[in-house]
Amino acid sequence: MHVKSTKTRPIIALTVAVMCLGCESTPKDQTDNKPSGTRQINTRVDHMPSLAMRTRLIEAYKELWPLISVDQQHKKLPTLLNDPLHELRSFGIERISVLNRDGEATEEELQTVVSLLADVNQRVRLSAAKILPEINLSNLAQSVASYLANEEDENVASLEIIYFRDNPNPVAIEPILARINTNLAAESADTFVSLLGVIPRSSENYSIWIQFIRDAKRLHYVPTLLTLEVILGTDKDRRLLIPMLKDNIDPTRLSVARGFAAVGYWEPLLERIEDPSLMPFTVTALQNKGDLEAFKTLLTLRSEIKVADWDTAALRILKSLDTRSLLLADDLLSGVGETDLRLNILVKVWKQSENRSLVARIAIAKRTVPLLNSNGREDEALLLLEEHKDVYQIKDEELLSLHFETAILASSWDSAADVRSDPQSWVNAWQTMKIRDPAAAVVIRQQIIQRFEDLLTESQRQTLELEEASVVTEETTTEQEVIP
Image (cartoon, one colour):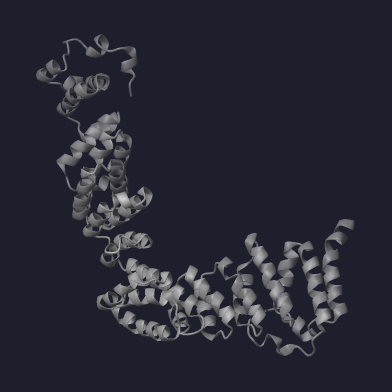
């Protein structure tokens, strides 16, 4: 009994505090525990307590609320979020934020917070907008876009715009464009750049949207508007902006460079390669262009770019190339001794080659497997061949031979037998291995005897230097006989 009394004491204290301060809602309101989430929420208030009393009430809630159980918090939150006092509605939003960070907030509670973006009180809307980055709901983007379209307070709208900058969604295009020529031009421009990254290019839409950008430029100096003008414009528009790459004002120069980088317009940037501030944009532009010519240009910049940055850019370009261009680029890398990068690229492209034709995938495999084998990575090469057996829908003798050779190098005898079940292929492999690795050749010879002794021709036996008697007994050690 004592324990139960202790657990309920914070709840009783809260109730008494509310009653004493006269801040409870009317009996009619108490029967309606569902938050309305509309701006009519305060129309039920017949009287408002003094500021001092309200302050004491909020302090009481802040002190006592953490002491009640999570289950009790869930039960009381609907009433709290629908309270006539905006301070308590804001407090309720804060408590849901805490629950959400602990993984305890319910979907219904989070939906209620989102609905309070339409609250009549600006402070409540601001509280709700502040925790948008913490909320994960399937319909969140649509809801925020709808509320943003009608939001009158710039502070709240700014947070909603920034939400879409970090979580771009096409539903935000119209409400963001509507803000591009307002005091929120900077936030809107940054967000619109993010939005363009998640929607397909449309010449028709771009020709409309660029007018909004040009109108905003007349009234606002926002460098990101230049970035948007580059992205949305035509090549003719971009050529007119090239002189700005020499502008003495850094934000102007770099914003134009950022736009050029986004659309892969690398030539003007390369012409100003002496400006170190433009180098990162040049590399990004080459990546986004993503063709063989861009790769060749990147190759000429190897000595001027950090190794890690250059490797990342090269990988991104090469992964986007068609198979013919990829193999030509690999030839270029081979010529400059970039073996590690070649392997990294070829393996990744091969693993992600589902959308390429079988002929293309076979060509990539023929380039990749020998390179892996020559660098002591035959186990990895065999695994890739085993995982992508669909390439054998087309019978390619060269690839089959590579598969067999790789299995032999990896000492995967059953895999080798699956590919080549005739003794002569194994005898040929043994002859090659005698020169390369005599110790491995001994093992291959033993495998031949175990698998094919009864099938060997006289010529093959002579090549293997076998006696008429069983060689397994006479010429092998016990250790060799149990080799798997």
